[in-house]
Length: 69
Image (tube, rainbow, N blue to C red; front, side, top):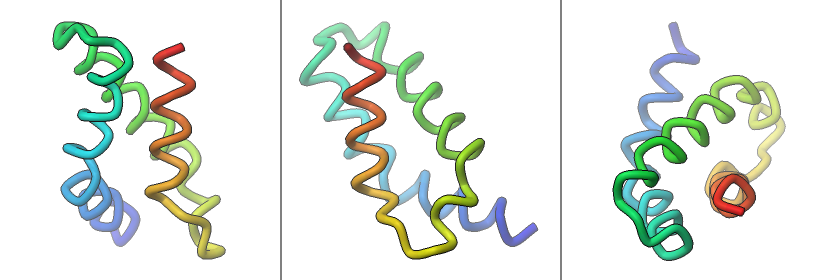
C-alpha cells in the first residue's frame, strides 16, 4: 500500500511537468496523454530503482524525452 501512496504522490507532483515536457516535443495534445501514461506505467514498473535515492524527476524527464523520440 505504501508503494501506491508513493506513486500517487509522484504522479501528483510531476504530472504537469512531464506533460509540458512531452508537449514541447510532440506538439500534439492528442498524443501527449498516451505518452504520459506510458511514462508513468514505466515509472511504476521501475519503482524499485528509486528506493536508493535515485532522482524521480530526472528519470521522468529523460524517460518522457526518450518516449517522444
